[in-house]
Image (cartoon, rainbow, N blue to C red):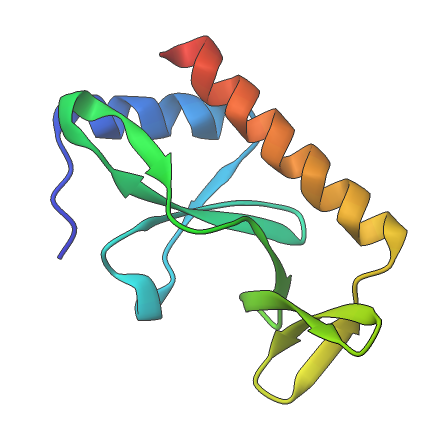
Length: 109
């Protein structure tokens, strides 16, 4: 079970108020999922009510974390046997998701 302080909960509420959703990923019970659209990231609770990224942001595939991997000269997002090409459009959207979330967290802290 994830142990969050009142400061963690307040920060999550403020992140949610900025257009992000708080979600659970059962395989990662030690982290908090943050989602917007087709992209998400896991946040790890830190002391003093802060969070840090637990791994890299990812594309959701059927609601699950799609890992970005190289296949020859191409990159794809993979969840089990399903693959989605990592074309420029989703890569830009993923970078924008990360940037927006980092900015939201910084504005709250």
